[in-house]
Length: 247
Image (cartoon, rainbow, N blue to C red; front, side, top):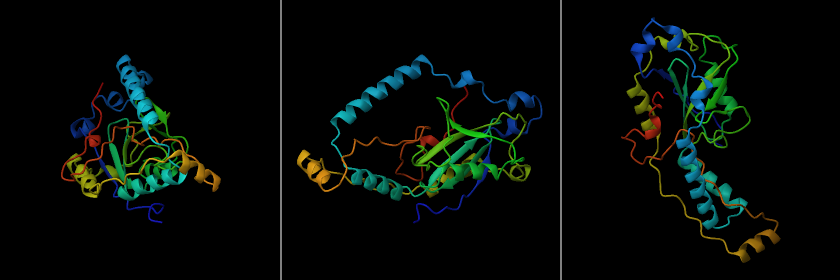
């Protein structure tokens, strides 16, 4: 189906601070990957996370039970409403590689996309989300399962240190960040009202179980780690497009 087939990547590369990117002064400092303590969770992070967990627990306790078939129907609806996943990969030097994927493409496809744009494709590297630092190490996971749907900012990491990982041929004509934003905004469909699912009674669940069905647990809403929020107006740039500020 369309959800499994690859989509035109529309790859482009930009840098939020072109002046810093082109300066040849203190290159080692400019291209240094953040230390591990950059990704450590602060007390504020803990408080916010605790509040989120309490809210999520309350929501799950109040949510009606849904069957496995209903969960699959909800997933299908979401992926059909947002047939493209926008991924931005930020490199240690600040450069950002942007591309589009289908929700059911795998993490392996994302990693291959990044590899194609490296100066030295043989260099081992890993992809992760932050904060907190979470490695995308299961290459068989779909982008939907990896919580990269409908959009995410992913970070590039490598034990091999170099000033620039991206191939020079892709850096010859970098795009402006405004161009990258317009490309994403124009590809985002107007979200339609989600289909509501009626609460399921215990009798219905028992009937489903007797027929060979499976009772389901409440579904947790999947969101991207970069704080994705759906935006119905394609003329405005969604908040998740903004790169995180320096800490």
